Length: 285
Ligand code: AMP
Image (cartoon, rainbow, N blue to C red):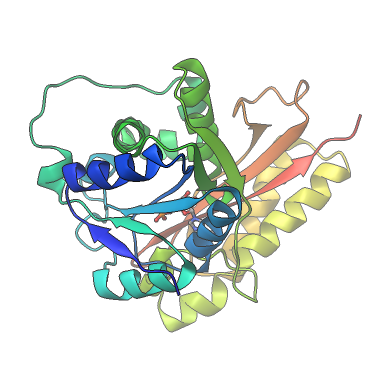
């Protein structure tokens, strides 16, 4: 196992990285909010394959949580995370405090465009402002050659790709497929907040999305597909629907006549947590 270095301050991290860069090493970066699972570790695996050095950050970013959301309850376990990161081959683990990341508030905001109008952007107002804010800071701090993001958060990934392109950010963005439990449930830090029964029901989400994909292939109408996916989730679980939407990907618009791929994405609320998942479907012709 390689040695893991844990740093808590921006200065420490940058001193360390400057040394490595002088030797010409490439840096792969995996931003996370911690409570690591195999989804996060598959990002690390990819980063290891493409880069000399892997940096992971763990920061539960207050700016991307709205009032009444689960910032306080978000699962955290720094010690366990450090062990998993070391095992997975992370070289540098950056775990800043909120004071380190946000020492003062100058009031400048970064606003996402139309890609944030639907899905979580609609049901979590301001969420992607907070994501872009922290992502820009982290990219500037780490200055990675490549950054790794999971398709489980497909809207976040699409918005970040646009951000990087529109603002000429130096990092390349690498998409990583969603890692699932054996029964199809997308791995998520929030899964620990499911009750035993909800955990048994939750694979219904992916099953419903797969059914939606079949309906797309059969040429069903968008509204019917959304309705059938929502019905299947409600019928087979105690979750309630936040949204089920079929959109062009990665544009995330309702115009699906001019896209190579569509996404069916959903958010489902259980008693103590809200889960998201999606399926990407290539269109023929
Ligand atoms: P989070 O800690 O939940 O903010 O996630 C950090 C990164 O890991 C994001 O790029 C997520 O999309 C990615 N990620 C989370 N869950 C999974 C998963 N099940 N499979 C692949 N990537 C994931």
